[in-house]
Length: 111
Length: 119
Image (tube, rainbow over all chains, first blue to last red):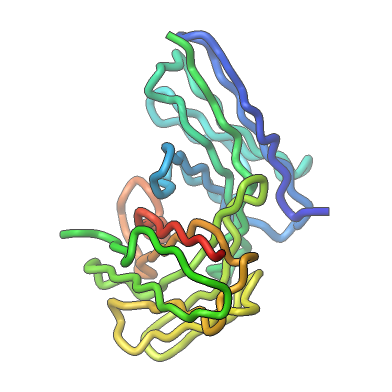
């Protein structure tokens, strides 16, 4: 079993829809959780960063962490065609700088 | 400020050939990383470095060597390339200091990638 599981998609939604992207993990020691966006043939860029449990909101993006369920989510409100990309979750334990990534979910927002 | 750059952008190798991928960052970052990205596998850590002169193994280190002789550069070497090393390689760096930025100072900055094909 992989340490981090992520549905690869692809996920197609109409413009304006609310998108929910998710990852599950098995290592209860993970404390830092990140979401990256990767456009085709580009390097990943950090979208959201959360420490431990709880929610964090930034514009149209909300990141949630539920440590009791070992489950993290990224919500995108009012999705736009420019949000079409692959979204990767990543996490690490405290005291180490080794990041474990999910496989990525490919999202397509249709105009 | 160029951020993280990678050289070359593309390369085709024959089995058994060797090559070195160069990663350079101009942000004075302490930590640097090499990942490979394959379809369905996500990003997997090959090697990383927490400072000049130090390196450590990641998740998939076999067949690769690295060196960090200068703080701004992190080199990834393939001594004898194999078809299984066909992949897209990404370099990343982070700053380890404290910050009041909205996003953690541990944000990874990624380079644009190197597409390597081994035939």
